[in-house]
Image (cartoon, rainbow, N blue to C red):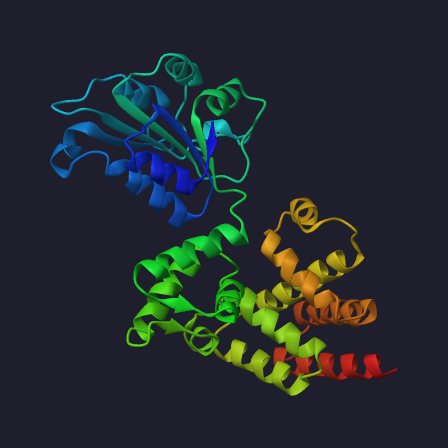
Length: 341
């Protein structure tokens, strides 16, 4: 049975606990939320005896299953958490631990009534051809964060703020999502900072988000490209200089810019849906959404010209000792002239 996070929270609150859960997704914040929901099923004083957590990179699966078969000590239930369930994917095991998945298959068919078994698979994709994966999806309660949407995150943020009496403007929320690449972990971490800043007013606006949220490389690149395409060339050059001055590696920065222009061109020329394109390109759907907004305003010539110019700059940077700042300024001048011709 598939459920979402809200349903899981409601079920646990109502005391409706299932024997086996499969949790899929790689956002650490969401995984931590789920983990604590299950850990809190066991009173503090009983956790030494009735809570067990096993990392499959260090412990054999059979050890965890044997533990799950044990009855609780002086308590109503036992919680067993299996971490890093790589045996559910198509990836080969990197360690020396041998996992006998038949033990898990047999357990799923007849679980211990007083044990809650939680299997955490922090991966975007599981191998649906495997018998154990099929069986878990059929018989376990299945919670996946792989398709955690913008709307899901918006609800989570608004709920978090509402509980403490805060409000956030719509444009501020969208800016927060953009500056964090819609990473749930990054959003919730930055939200703590924003709430502290707005402690007196309880109101978070776009100016606060713009001033306080830490920008990742991809967001600095987004701003740099936006300046470039909008012909704010001085700002583009200044930001490039600032990033190098702050310690950003020239080739890493250039590679990120080329990658972003490649994405813009792919989005510009594709007829697929946002989700279909995101799946095909193996990028977050939110990146495709932002890219679609960008490419509506610019021609293929503007996008391809920048991509080719930056690719040439990369070749020069790798094959000569020329100054990266000078090379970028020359690229900007050539790009400006190409657009005018």
